[in-house]
Amino acid sequence: MDISNETKEQTKKRLIEVLKTSTLRIYETPYYFKETSVDDFYFDPEALAMVKDEEVWSYLIPMESPQNENFKIFSFHFKDGLDNSGFVGWLASSIKEELGSGLFVVCGQNSKKGGIFDYWGCPIEIADEVLGFINKLKS
Image 1 (cartoon, rainbow, N blue to C red):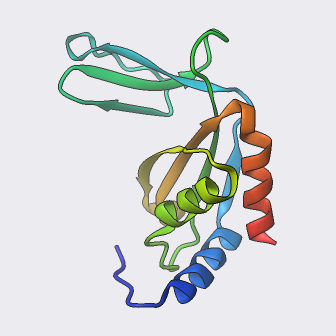
Image 2: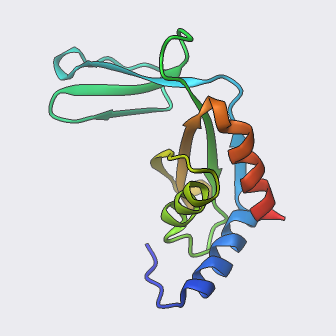
């Protein structure tokens, strides 16, 4: 993980370059969080992420019903060698300021694809606006 001493403008410039060089994948199927007791853990190969706290396992899995709180999912893999520190906070804050929506982010590690990668989720209702804003930042 990199530590950067830079101004806010330098950070923005660096992170826009990170965004421009990242690989963005957009998932067609909506996803939702399915919860089970910590005692009822099972491996779900459909899950993009499995996270737990003291009470539940939370599985990020493809939508099962439109009655669930479903999310549009997209992910970023970063170019190896670029300092992507601060990316999640910067992009999430930028989206919140521009569109008023919060997001969630689940991170993982893939050393063969530049290290840290992110799954992002946003409300389906504003997915087109979120992805349009990201594309505007990339151009």
